[in-house]
Image 1 (cartoon, rainbow, N blue to C red):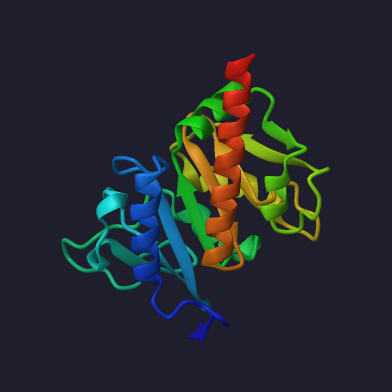
Image 2: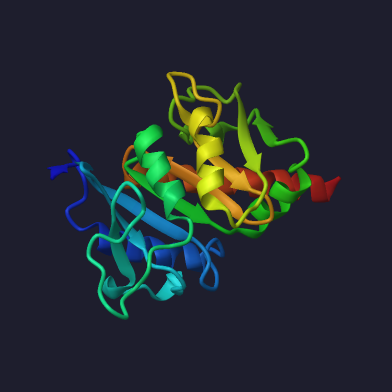
Amino acid sequence: MTEVPGSNPDPVSELIGIGREFHGRGWSLGTSSNYSVVTGRDPLRLTITGSGFDKGRLTSRDFVEVDSQGQNVNPVPGGPRPSAETLLHTLLARVAGAGAVLHTHSICGTVLSEAHCSDGFLEISGYEMLKGLAGITTHESTVRITIVPNTQDIARLASELEPRLAGPNPEVRHGFLMAGHGLYTWGRDLAEARRHIEVLEFLFEVVTRKRQLR
């Protein structure tokens, strides 16, 4: 298997730490959220959080390794199962070139995703924090975060998102929201994906508080 250049040699420890941090910040409460890191490209392999675990109390036993189809490559009787949303992680790794994918369920992200679901996107402009997103070099920018309806049919959602993620100028960049559900974002590695989560969650909170002041 071809390893990912510059990849973290211990992604599980990194993801355990991220789970504790995100839980503490109110972004991954209960058993919500899922996180993954690409550990190989040929063939594609991802280490991903198993289904149904408290992200503030993850252990090394709560992860699985999956292939490009989201199937557990080392199943253990009674062991963890891949998240129901694993196909979104493999899609982002295949099509968007993601080296890591992070999914959160913050209050502000959830509220804004419902408020703008009928629009199909949320636009944010003029904030210095936008420069924390890959490819953004000035606060005089507008970022459009795609919003998709929530669904239990993840395979269908992945199929619908694939053409919107492809090509040199993809329609869906940096992240997308599932209405009433949460945020998906990614990066070329775990550090970039984490930065994107921080930037977008900050901006979601700013937009929400600004509207409350009005």
